[in-house]
Length: 167
Image (cartoon, rainbow, N blue to C red):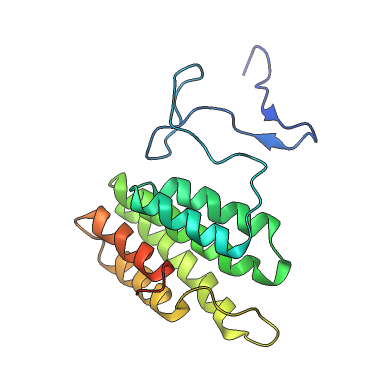
């Protein structure tokens, strides 16, 4: 490869950031093209805020943005909860793949997310109350991985209902 090395966007602490705009399905757009509003890099939600904001994005049909919210909780929340939030972020990326018509990628991420949530659910001692029905979320993610929904909107709505506690 010749020419100048590719320079990554960095935050003030030197961590890599992706400043490229994205469309409503989370796909990167060329620099300079307007995209949809992103979750800020410094967003550090509490558990209730993360669930509320993720449900809001899911209600708008934007699981990629819900993933960003849950990823922020995963990366900034207590270490003992990280597996839960990582799993939920992966489920939302799986839903994003469903929206994009990528059934194989969806199955991979939905199963990976279900695995993380299930592992978190096995260890209850000293954990805060469960923010939603973990068993229902694991079951739903595995069902969607096995039989991808022909209507991704219905799958997204189902995950939102579980997060709202109405699963």
